[in-house]
Image (cartoon, rainbow, N blue to C red):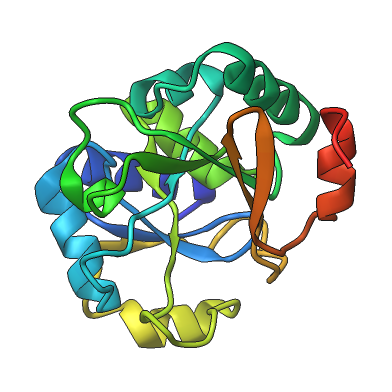
Length: 205
């Protein structure tokens, strides 16, 4: 099956509540409809993820950020500037969460982690279902990251509803995660991008 057909099959699966293991630009991940509580339950079950840990989401563009985030004012300006500079790419922004999101998505927190990946598969899936998708890594919670397609099939082939291994291979380095609050940035996880460079983009050192 070619990549486009795999994407169409995965899109239909996710739109109907399924969970698909997919490549991203950073790592292999578990993709589900970020607005579907039952699908989110499946993601937690597959990963063995503690209930208090929120799930990051992947978007196809800035317009989908508004579906999951209530960022506003100067914080929104800062987030937009970073998105214009680093998206699509390995920068995850932690922003105020929109009202009414599934508790499973936020882990009960008032923030949401959002990223636009530089990879054709998650972009096509989020655009195809017209909603953000989950972007958590495909490895069991606490386990080593999965970067090999054969390892992905071995680890998850029996528990997910589909697997895409075609397309660009993940680079194997997790995204840099920064939180935006009170017109300030806070580094939550070091990753593919240099944090100092991220800060300088918005005039911070």
